[in-house]
Length: 379
Image (cartoon, rainbow, N blue to C red; front, side, top):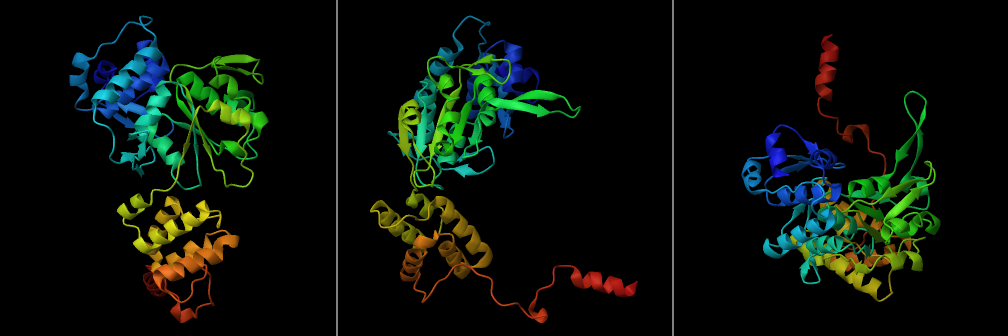
């Protein structure tokens, strides 16, 4: 792998490009490429389909790299061994990880391991994982940080089998062609697939996924001539579940497909480390305890706390507190307001609301408006 990249220093190669050139499976190539990136011996770019390119360290890595001839080993077993060895000998990833979109993810502890490492070990062992917890606790962020090759399906009540497997679409010439969906792409390229909000998807639709996850590791695309799609090594499914969301139903059929189920909550210590107002974090902790006791239905999670921090920086503390109250569900809004009042020491707090119309003299003109008017008069 390193030798291939070093020989083409100006090219950006996808996993598919490298798999075709080397004659190895997509899964084995993906694992090797990500290992080079983790070691700093190659660069990765791209958000949907990652691309890899040589850097200053790739040529040195190529001097010791060994590329076995095609067919001399089982790619999945080889990749799993390499990843396990690396995990055992390399320093564990505990610092922030930059996700594909550029955001930082801060690993947390899971089974005495960094969570991203635990998920990669489960992937190597082909153990599907279900992550469950309130929205905004970082389920999707964790999966994106753990699996740079991730494809995602955002589930809801309108998700269809076609959204998973694919369907016919019309091309520019007016002809109908079959466009494969993310499930087929993940299977054929040996990539990870996140089914986000899986419990909002109809059980009949999810049934199309199950043959790919069991011992068969294949599906039939009935809409496309009954074609059989087989999963390449590296294919892996992880799902997200928000128990408190209306319409979310974790069926026995779905739960039984995920051998490991991990509860995800907000790390309020992390919120403090990110320098979010300690008073607001204290409010969130208090509300979260009430949720645990069944006295309340909502508490701010890390997503809402980060949004509070950004709003405060732009509009000030008063507006940010008002917005925190306003985003709470109507049935919990009074309790949230009371908690904010006690923690911050204000007399009243209400949702962020538009006030009276401002007089024309009080409206700030956009930058450059005076110059434009002056130029207009000069003409």
